[in-house]
Length: 428
Image 1 (tube, rainbow, N blue to C red):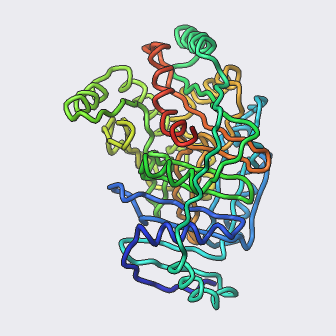
Image 2 (cartoon, rainbow, N blue to C red):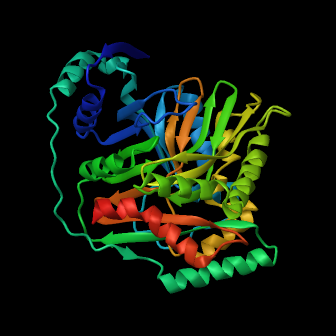
């Protein structure tokens, strides 16, 4: 079904830039880049898939069943995304908040052209009917000039929820926690700009350069873009092995080494941050158990501290063995949305944050990734991301934090501003 050709490149960083520039001619693009961040569960350093042969685009109604049929029928590589609002397919939930982006709830496509980069080897897989273009495309990529169209537009970034409203809403959540209605809630707010034009490729390049995260994404579906600098893996399947790595716990990085180590140490020993991470770890254990072989769910790492360009993060790793009596899409359905972006108990938390948030989350706190022909997959968590609808001229990014009984509303607000820093810096 696909022609497979291996190539060697001398300068991988240059080739990745040339590849992404060259791919802009296509309507659909997915770039997944690890930025060479050291991680135990990586399969590829970088993947680019472009130019849809077939695709599925739908709202949340029956979305997981439609995706299951598409994945099973196609039996090929599929790239795409799941929005947070697919929660409405899983449960009796609604998304009534304002939506300035208007992305479909689910979109996946079967690409004609895929490039897998590992070390300095590029494995190219083209669908058979366009395999005569492979060699000429590769030559064209290597001769692509890296252009930089500096966007001089001054964006006025607005905040959807004011600070005073944010503090009041967090107070409401904490009252519900004290009453025992929920234990934890991930509460988010949007920053946005209207009637603006940005250069998506240039904006992504800047964001990726200052963040260098392990789950970076440039995604394009015609005039809808995701420019993602995520540090978080949602879910990965390799054979029967399942891996989830939720993040809960954030601390600022400092240029001074002593101050930076102190910040990292304080995060590692912060009882509030550890409590919220452990609650979500327990939630993920429960989610994975629905499709796992009996007794196979394990916590491989609890509250590990990993350092990124902008922040230190507290990350846990939960694994399980997949029970093959289930469909692979059901594994995603049973754990979606990811616990790190909802709270606990999950359904109660989602209902509550829907009432208090003022923006439909859409692709923010959803997932982007791929399925392999044999049903394996790998998906990130869409955070630290800029979303852009070129047609609507609307730019958006959202940030959030976990609210628990130990939260200080002022500190939660400052954490949101810290998470917003990289996106704001790139846009302004």
